[in-house]
Image (tube, rainbow, N blue to C red):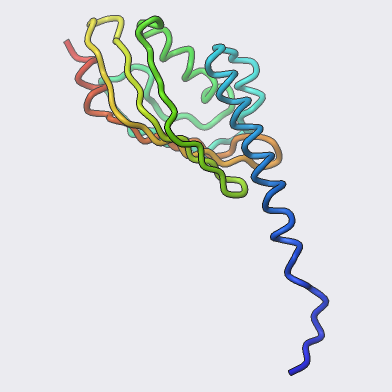
Length: 152
């Protein structure tokens, strides 16, 4: 059988490591900006429109729908406003990257300022990086524990 295609099939494989490296670098920058509470840098890292997913929870003041870079970046400040910063703990158990997608998995805990109650549980954060900016932010966490900590 003879084919006339000049595609050797190596281009996608050759660009996959580069895309993964770029994704990893952007996500690492996101983590550093988040830890530093740098809203300006976070805003620059998020795309103009973001596919944001965090289970709606009316009892939790920092959880709400978001879609713009500024709204997404503001979530970090809103979380800090409603929780006790010195009680916040996050451990990162896995940082997986596949092309433009990254998944962070770990454990988080904190204390809600208004109630003094604590929350904890595992989390998974899926991020997608396109053209150097985060276009998807899907966070899965123990929303029951967070909601219970927010109610008096």
